[in-house]
Image (tube, rainbow, N blue to C red; front, side):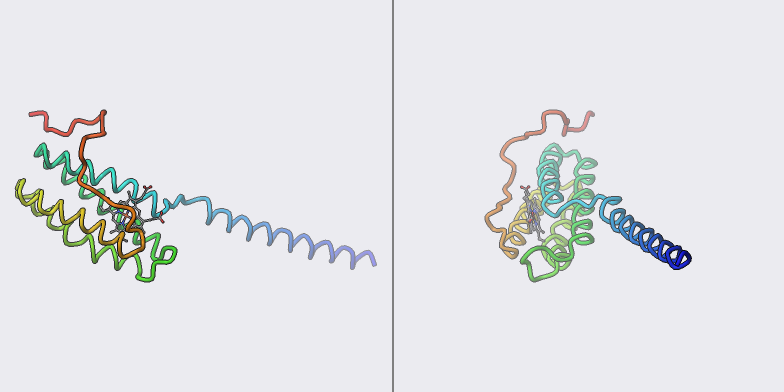
Length: 161
Ligand code: HEC
């Protein structure tokens, strides 16, 4: 009797430990790595989209190149962490390359050439691409526009020299 209680205790202990471990791993999986939501990545991309405009306008090509890089990284994260999203049927990585690859590459080229006219044209294509993807994903109510004023009070967009 005594020994069967003992083994019951052992089994119970093992099960409890196992459950605790599994629970911990699940917790770690969910909480160790913060994964930004698609909406958060987008809100950040919207800021970069605006900053890119003011950098290009000021012909601060280094800053403009940086903002394009940041946009690329944001979309890479969106594709990596949100392969699917809500009711959207097409995979997110596919949509992103369909609408963003060309304007981003065009902007990189324009920036490399310090070409303001090409920059503006490709910036317009980028904005159209943002909106085309919103249309394609039933988020067409969310319209991206050319920034009408500079809301960033604490950043200088021109070059210092
Ligand atoms: C995959 C196609 C796709 C592309 C490309 C895309 N978006 Fe989005 N965007 C979405 C979806 C889907 C949402 C809604 C996400 C959600 O459910 O929260 C969204 C949401 C947004 C939001 C709302 C976030 C908020 O908090 O107000 C903004 C702003 C936005 N996008 C800006 C942009 C900009 C700027 C670009 C281009 C530089 C862009 N998006 C490119 C699909 C896209």
